[in-house]
Amino acid sequence: MKNFFVLFMKEMRESMRNGKWIWLPVVLIIIGISQPLTSYYMPQILEAAGNLPDGAVIDIPTPTGEEVLIGVMSQYGTIGTLLFVLATMGVISQERQNGSLMLVMVRPVSAFQYIASKFASQLVILLAALISSYVLAWYYTNLLFTSVSWTLMLGSLAVYSLWIVFIVAVTILVGTLLRNNGGIAGVSVLFLATVSLLTTLFPKYMEYSPGNIRAQASILLLEGEWVRSITNVVGTTVGLSVLCFLLAVVWFKRFERYDG
Amino acid sequence: MLVTVKDLTKKYKEHVAVNEISFSIEKGKCIALLGPNGAGKTTTLQMLAGLLTPTSGKIEFAGYEKSDYRALIGFLPQHPSFFNWMTPKEFLQFAGELSHIPKKRLASRIDEVLAFVSLDQVKQKKIGGFSGGMKQRLGLAQALLHEPELLILDEPVSALDPTGRRDVLQLIEQLKREMTILFSTHILHDAEQVCEQIIMLKDGNVKWDGTLGLLKNEFDSLAMKVKTVEPIKGCLDTLDFIEEIEYVDVTTAKVMLRDQSETNLLLQALIRENKTVIHFEAMQDSLEDAYMKVMNS
Image 1 (cartoon, rainbow over the protein chains, first blue to last red):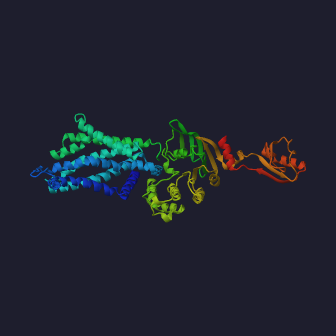
Image 2 (image 1 turned 135 degrees about the vertical axis):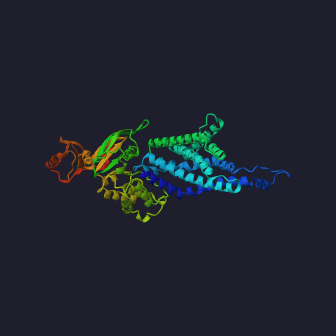
Image 3 (image 1 turned 180 degrees about the vertical axis):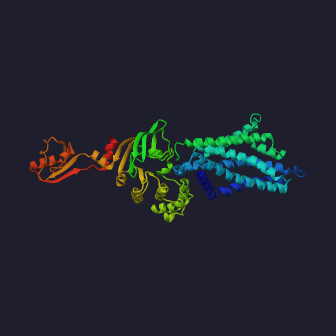
């Protein structure tokens, strides 16, 4: 347990020094607040574009606060997922490639402690970025549109966070399987995209798929209450994340070597 | 006995890197693992350090029950790499905490080992800017930090310039008094300088395991160099205790004896022949010769 904490603190200091703690929240905040702002100013933006024929009437129904927050989550869905994968891909492979992993593993460190420290530290950074971005977007939504209660905001955030947990779990698992950063990012993104695509293509068979997380967070916002389907998807997402994590630990134990 | 290694084997698919080697390490000894590139030295050391899982075989530490004995070992890899954004002090702090060194002890230990490897001047500088020699010394510092029972050094001097090499060898010389050291090298001279015991590996097999003195004795050629004032040729040919004679010039010969104890007979024979002996020397094989003999046998 102590070693987990030591490794975790090292990860925190590392991401502090290499600026991950700055760029990741900044990029996510920009993505997050751009949604309420562009929704609000859309008529003016279209007008300023100025290539509409005279007399054209722009009538965009003002979305509700809940709908804007759903829009925010869909923004995270595409660029956000890519960003999260890119931020996580190198955490193990980098230490493996440059050989610094070896000087960690000569000490009494277990595979579980090592993988858990990577997993937890990535989650803390990504979730902190997500929370700051989402809360700011919520703040602007309340200013510019109808207000959404903070309990609903937190509820949808908590449900959506599980998608991040799933992304990190998948990327870390792929990160133990492959050595090359490009490969890790490629395979992880491909896998996550496939899950999302299958979920949209076969809604009947993919009811419990983690790809449904965003839809469930939206349902929570629209319905205003926790429904059965949310529990199901949350259950499978947590379950699959734990599975990925355990597989990563098992795979890490089977490493033939810690350098290159 | 500190460590007993039994039938240690490592296979990578078809390739056998280390083939059922067995040896033991006595406490307080300094042992060199010698062998050409690709002999399996690094693989053996990494298995001992707990970084590689052996395909089969056992590694046992005397009086240690747990199967994970990494706490007892200090390891310096061939090319140590650190987290470049850290300073030496930060890295040692991190490494020490992973080895569960109590806080107060750790603070003083860090200063001690940094002073020992003479990195105390640069302890607040980023490791990223260090030269190869400095990284090697920092690697040694982290291996010593937790005062391990067994210090394993993988080619500690191979990548260093002559000054760095001398520095590190001197450090090893000092460490010998405090702990058991096992280090690998392909340079005989280094082994000869600091070690008592030598284990030679070739193609994953132990070719020789014993002390330096034994190695020299075993492969002693039993040759005598004889020089006389008078021409020497012809007068020794009939003696039966001589195996072979090689004449260097008219007055000098290299004489191979059947038995080392018969040198006196040779001298007597020369005197009987009325030769004036001006040089009479037992020719010792250098370690290099012994090494070549072991490797080619």
